[in-house]
Image 1 (cartoon, rainbow, N blue to C red):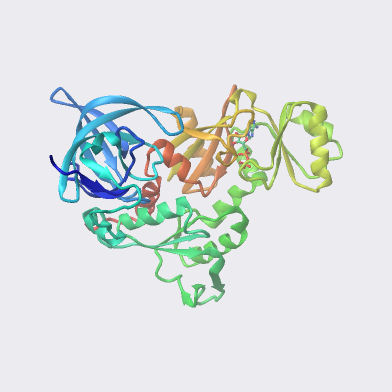
Image 2 (cartoon, rainbow, N blue to C red; image 1 turned 45 degrees about the horizontal axis):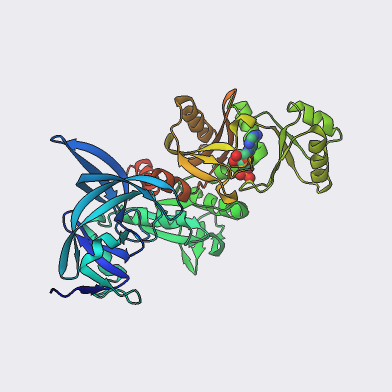
Length: 457
Ligand code: ADP
């Protein structure tokens, strides 16, 4: 009788046929089939046989290192995820190497799933093993340098741009993605915490300093990711860069204008960009007139400083609207009163615009019972196909502010698409996960194009 090999609850695997020399797998006897995280999965016919072409990001927490793979499809299966959702997945068959042993296993291609591990070895593959649930890496662990070493050929040689990411939290998904996308394209990108930057106003030699050194001189481009509470200081820093001619991927003016809901609305109306009928007020003596001006209830009342849907309420009747407005009035808050787009049924569309093109779009659906589709409030995002009119509207809305990158929120109304707002630091997580697109890479490529940068390798 042959002796069974023992493996741990995590192991490094290699797929020679897929050109994946190292991928960390979780060994999960709870799952039947093994699966690998794959994006941009396409079914193609090769000599009458069905093949899958797909991309794998083999390194945990890095979506910029991409291995292009293809394999024959041996089956299509409906898999129920841990959250109970069913998903159709292609199954391929390929040899996997674990330590000194190679086995041929079935592997499902798990698109878009936010898998904790890039690979899961299910119990079907385990007839040849005994699992030790309390230990891992029976065949040795790899350091992150070891892993990157395996994928060196996918990382461009450092050849050029010096980029600065100006933000507050390095650990945020979007910031991590921008850093890794720039590195994968061979750029030298540094993270600078806005709070720790300080400025030297000097007519002859203006400076931005960070921990005792100047960071202004040798930077080719700045990528600002300024959170709303930092707009004032962040934009001042950006102007310092702009002053010496450094390219900012969204300039200070564009950011501050788009953050001001009142100013945005004024710009939209002057440029003929359709929005819901909107009124602004501080402390109107005639609340009733303000309400009738936007067509009466049901309507939406927003605090001007609202973000993530927190200061947005709906009023079903004129009486309710009046009392909410009066309550806000007593707080001396600036408010926005807007017709309620009921037919949108709690959905809106986020278009991700880069350099005048919509590169991805998702529809966000509010949690049941809510009309606000913000992800922070429990809304869910799904990939959506948008119309040519919606695309044009999104591109025009970003252009009003001269934003190089923007998230444009559009609501579908009986009158056609309407712009709700334009965001100058659109988040990447929801939209990348829902669409499988590498938007951080699209941003870096847009900067390269703007700077006429041609990679040398
Ligand atoms: P915030 O900037 O706080 O996110 P928004 O103006 O984007 O505020 O509104 C939050 C959400 O409320 C939107 O994503 C949308 O789903 C919903 N919403 C906003 N305005 C309207 C409206 N006029 N009619 C219907 N739903 C709306």
